[in-house]
Length: 454
Image (cartoon, rainbow, N blue to C red; front, side, top):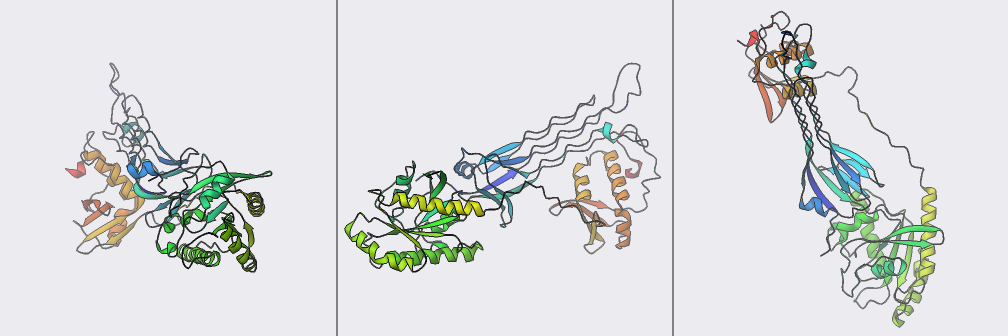
């Protein structure tokens, strides 16, 4: 079995940010050295990059769990931690990255194309960065943020100009071997081709890529045979070539019925995926005319195919009859498709800023004097807080108060002792709300303490 895998699910985790450092400069004859804790390093990103030397997703199927490097903690003396190493994963050209629910994240086409799939967490601020006129020497630092973690699906959609489609053993692999330098496995039994084969063909000044799609059978669009797994490889082809076997001895098969069956599967696949393949130019290739019965059948069905406005070419992969005509016919279609293709637009970054005037958080009543606070800022601030340090907890309370959460809880009907949940749904931090504590008027205590928590 060839080691070709064109689908894989990756469990990726970006690096965590390093924790900030809480340090005070100490030097002889300098009792008021001040805070000098450095910031933590940023976590590494998970990046996918198109590599021309990559041809399969086999490695990701074998090792689906991948993680970027973590940032290191900050240190005293204003020394920031090192950033975590990015994890760059090479993928084949034409890889589509989707979330598990099917939403497309990135479509990677072209050597060197990169996409950041998961972003590393920011490093925590050291106490030097947290110093203020009110809090001149903070006895705490912020913790680093966690990197993004989720599952993504990788799917290869072959980059080719021409796709050869047809029943198993119709001679598609033999045609690619005769037209190009590709050397696919060829044998006289169905489903010899288990992976899409690519070959580069030159016709005059035109060079193009031909893909041999593994044999299709009726019901391929619903999962029969190998068709469903490989029909996606025709999506990017600008021209489809029907390879019709004129020398088959299977009962009930002939070039016309084969053509109708394959067209039905292409149409069903388009309805299933929303990708319309009906507008792609078609060429009908009557293969194996070196066999006497095959030549007679080709001459019989040629007028019928031309009535369907198909260009018909009789060929023999064994004797190379008609191959020159076929290569130039495909080149003509490729040139027309390339000329009609719009000029590539420059790469753009899509920014989705928060709606102007939108609240940075929301308070959701849960009943029985319990409330959940949702919002990016409150959730991030909770993750950054060292709850073993009272001064850090008091700093968090000040930040939440300035954001307006205290006032919002009062308007939502919260009373003293209310349970307030902040953070991820499955890992929230629970606070007992005490509206009598005035964060702005309470004087600060010694480093690492907060009088409001005594």
